[in-house]
Image 1 (cartoon, rainbow, N blue to C red):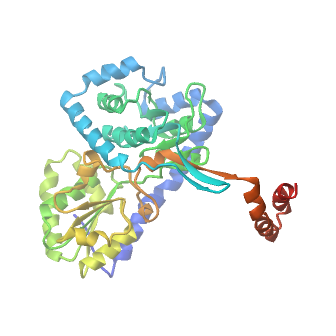
Image 2: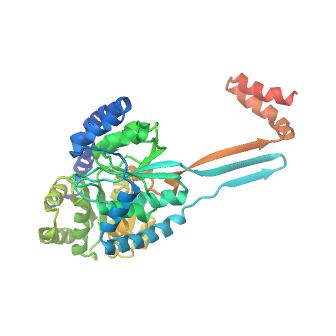
Image 3: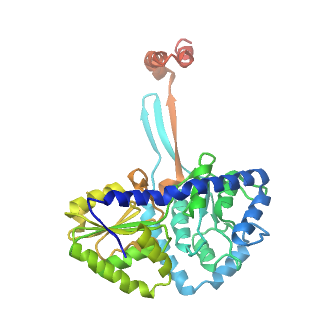
Length: 425
């Protein structure tokens, strides 16, 4: 099921992973761009039109009422609610460690400082396509709450039978009472620019399909975004000691997200590759999303056979995967060598779904190689920083000549004059 690569043909794998985005993203940008323009020009009318076109739902009110949220909360499985509450506690405990404090530096006549301020209005996109993601509500809302965001709205595509109880329950657990029943590029446009009925926000976060990702890219600047999330990815580094049963299960756990998802095994053991392939064939028979998994593994999965684990780590750092599992002996000794990964899972009993749902680390992660320069969603994603400066008259006089010289070197004479007007008065 999985094609094997090595030094001779690994460039083929790199090209394939790049093309899975590039081939489709250009068209998605065109489609999303047209939708965004329509929403900007026609407001509510366009939002309703595209919701009916893509979701087959005629919208009345855009927002759920508090009563509707409470009613759906009551319909949610009580045991699931308990599980989500436990997960929420873990997520909160982990993310509270990320809180940054403002600071101040004082010297005779000089005060400098930085303020850490919450982003006030945040929209969280929660996918509602072929799968259900109440976990995404927790992962987005809890760090935003910790950061101090004043208003948080969930945006999620409507179904013919309404918003799912699990989404409403997750929102209620997080203390969110605003759910916008709109999805797709039209939802992104509506909260980015505002309509007659939908208030614009300051930042949009959360994963979505390729049209949501394209829309977020296009509205960036009018609002902030967390990242342009691509299809899900997992890369597993494993040596001969690893359990093929676990590896196969974890590869498929990502493949079931999307036919464009990428699941890669990198190992120095050819025997392990053969064992994993056999496990894939055995385990896939009982999985509900078998067709999606098979297409994902055939089109964008693979095994890379390396000479040693050091080479495997080098490949992982080059690919910079969203999720990276280290199933090797002495895994903690290898952790410092991993430079580019959204989230790292250590050992055989820390599978990626642990992070998706329960451990507390965030599952909104950089994809498509962007872990080389970006980070998981967290409290930092929901704050902005503002600096402040105070100089007394005496201290400005002391520094005045230096500042004027610097400004003059850039031929910005009005800058220099701003200082001169003060030190000569």
